[in-house]
Amino acid sequence: MDLLLSFLSVDLPSDSHITALKCFWLLSPKAISCIPVHENALRALLGLLEKADSPVNLRCEAMRVLRK
Image (cartoon, rainbow, N blue to C red; front, side, top):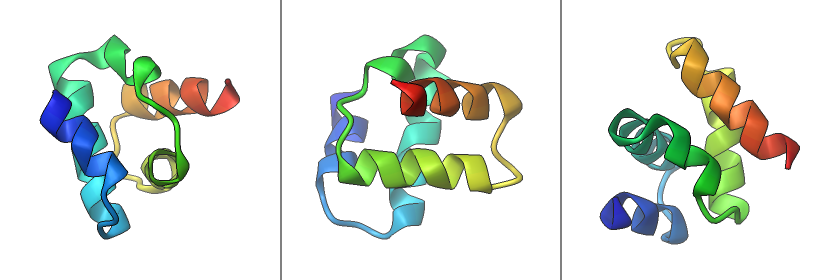
């Protein structure tokens, strides 16, 4: 999980950040609310909301984090 979180701190294409968050969510669905929120993470969370193929539960978790 640390490796997935490290992807968020590196400047990569937005899709890479979104994929890392999806993998993180698959490993631990509730842990996504504990990710360190910074610019890349915010962009990835917003990207999750925009992608129609994101699971509904994941989009709900992303909205919960963004509301904080």
